[in-house]
Length: 97
Image 1 (cartoon, rainbow, N blue to C red):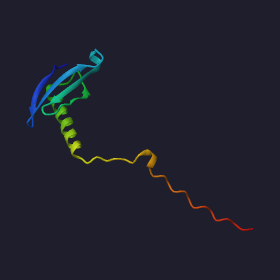
Image 2: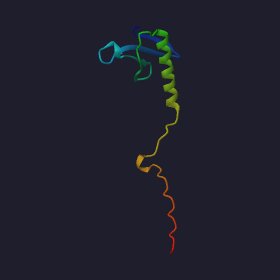
Image 3: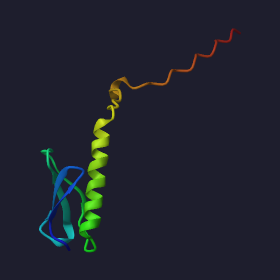
Image 4: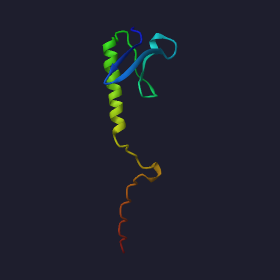
């Protein structure tokens, strides 16, 4: 498994590291941080066949998609108590005998 590394893409500096979640290599995740962003991300598990190029490609793709999603207007759903309730069918007319 490759070790952590840094790279620059589209003017952003990325710092990638592999961290074990439970202390075992079976539960290793790629974490990365981006210059200008105070958040760290762990978008996918580390694999034995990871290469610097494959990890870099996935990290850039993940972060580019995240930036795109942040530009989209938020879609808020209605409160569950105010959700659309189907209208009751009209009552059948009473039959006079």
